[in-house]
Image (cartoon, rainbow, N blue to C red; front, side, top):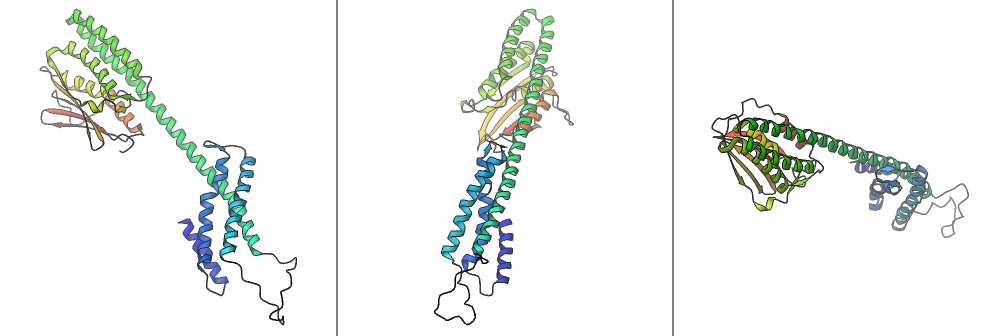
Length: 339
């Protein structure tokens, strides 16, 4: 838009000051020149940068002067070759075939004035554009670090929450079945070991997330016994998919804590993962007590939703619905930022 508007204005002013019609080269030259300015002016300043941060101005200025002199001089030279300036008019009374007198010191070729104007314009505009791009790069870098830090803080909040709930389940089992409580303590150690590994990583494979959930479910099955039935619908081809840690475990924990656990008859949990047209669907269903109409997320699900919003690589969605006798918690995303 800038190239079209400014180039059109220059062509209009030139057309008003010249009596003869403008040639094709005269029409195109302003547009080509402005486009070259926008495309080429920032390059020498970016060469003089260290990543997104600009270094010494003198270094950038020296590189910019050499670079701009080269491309502006080349462009004006091409313009002179393909569209040479017309000869000056002969003085009154000068013989038709006699050579013109040499140009005096007061006269100068206007091409040099055009070159100097473009040279100064390219130097200052290039610095401004390069600084703007460097500032945007710094802002994106800072925003990425803030998202990463916030996501890490939420992840660290969730890890002790998982252990607290596991210890709470263990305390109930100690009075009911001390022998089973010993087994649960061993499995709690395995759960803690897996959680400590998860806490040090930004991405995990789905197979590793499943191992964490299996360790958690083994403890809950010791506590709930026949009241908890678990089934998996998990194709092998999804095992190597990566995602932030602790995305599946809160869904399973929420199903047991709010669905299966409060129900005297217990229920069934189905855990499934499918790939459909590049979209990954991670679903946890349970037949326990249905969620209330006005659903308010607890720590686990609230943490999951917050981290999902910070996942810049793939825009995901979370939904929880009741269909028939099943409560469905569904997490969907497209790997690679496909939304």
